[in-house]
Length: 120
Image 1: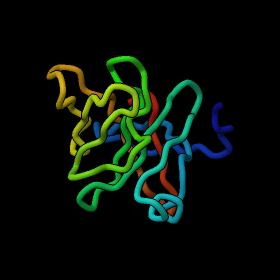
Image 2: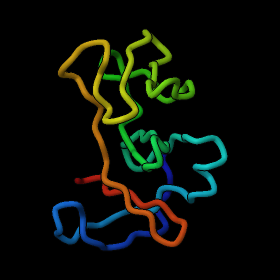
Image 3: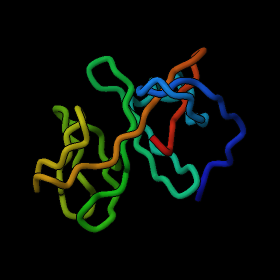
Image 4: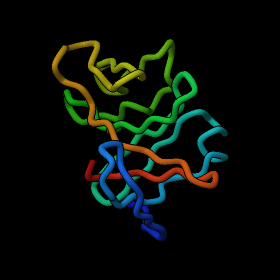
């Protein structure tokens, strides 16, 4: 299931070059539960707030493809539903097996809306 994209913006990414960002969610939606998952195109995205910063990582476990964000983040750690692989909320690094981090996405917040760069 994928979210139909209705809004895109062009702004500078973290490298300072212009990039396209797609609407992902509102701050109100995120603040309701502190985390949420969304599909955009073929990207299953886990959006959350960690230590005051909004972050987005892949919601697909590197082990067997299970949902990383099914359970709430506990003590800065997401645990995959299927086989309990664990990932750091700080940077998506795998705590179960080093060298298998989750993909991180660049996020922009503009006028209470959260946008994501799927290519960056």
